[in-house]
Amino acid sequence: MALDGFSGVAVTTMISLAIVDLHVELVAGAAAWTAGWWLLREPAAEE
Image (cartoon, rainbow, N blue to C red; front, side, top):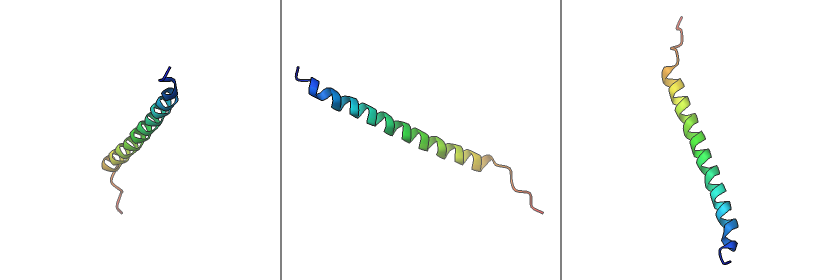
């Protein structure tokens, strides 16, 4: 079958896209968590 040669490329592409998507979500989540922490942190006690 002619499509057998493309199955490896398709699987590799799907895995690559999944890894990239996960990386983007992790970076966005870390940025959101850091922004939330920065905005909601307690003000430092000034003496």
